[in-house]
Image (cartoon, rainbow, N blue to C red; front, top):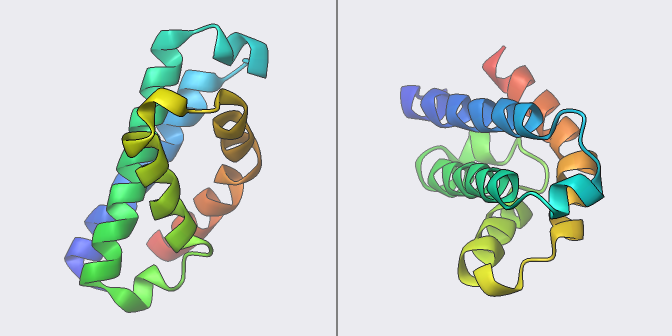
Amino acid sequence: MRDEALKLLTDIREALLEIELFTAGMNLAGYESDALRRAAVERKFEIIGEACNRLSLRDEATFEKIAHAPQIIGFRNRLIHGYDAVDHAIVWDVLQNKLPRLKAEVDSLLG
């Protein structure tokens, strides 16, 4: 694995950990009512998606080891380009149900 891929995977891991920290002990209602946390979480999702995008361009073999990586990039694009129509319930669902798998995959790749 290339050094740049390691850096991108580390960036993803860091963003995942920060999302966990920002949302610890919260539920959907609390998340929806906290604009500061929503902004922080969305920013970290943007970083995850951009890091995946860069990984696809710089180390395709590593990129292909991340399940649903194209969808992760698409999610990032929806957050950025559709900033005025973000469905907080969808973001919450992603962080509750998709991030654990991504975290496990990234941890495995980082060894």
